[in-house]
Length: 113
Image 1 (cartoon, one colour):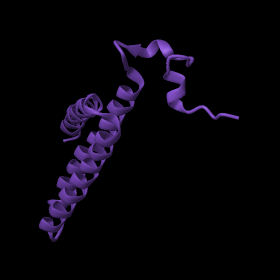
Image 2 (image 1 turned 180 degrees about the vertical axis):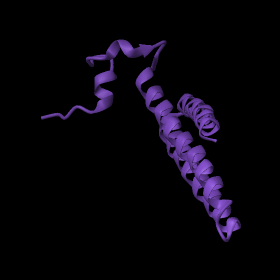
Image 3 (image 1 turned 90 degrees about the horizontal axis):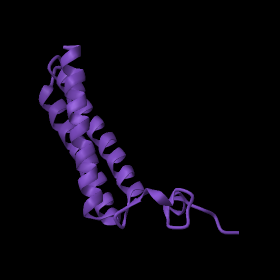
Image 4 (image 1 turned 135 degrees about the vertical axis):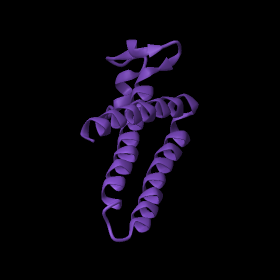
C-alpha cells in the first residue's frame, strides 16, 4: 500500500491540485514562508529578549555574543536546508517571511516598551 505524503495532495492528481500557479506549486512556497516567519520570530524575538536580559546582567558581553552566535546559526541552518531542497523561489519566500516577522516583533516590542 502506498502512503501519501503532504506533497502528494498538491500534485497534479492530488486533492489540492488547483493550488499550482503558473507551473510552480504554491504549497512549498507557503511552507517556506511559514519557515521564514518562524525563523524571523525566533531571531528577532531572541534579540529583544537578549537586550532586555543582557542590559541588567553582570556580564552583558557574554549574553550578546552567545545570543548572536546562536540566533545566526539557527537562521543560517534554516536557510541552508531550505536552499538545498527548495530552490531560489523558496529562499525568497523564506526571506519574505523573515522580514514580516521582523516588522511584527518590532511592533510588539514598541508596544511593550
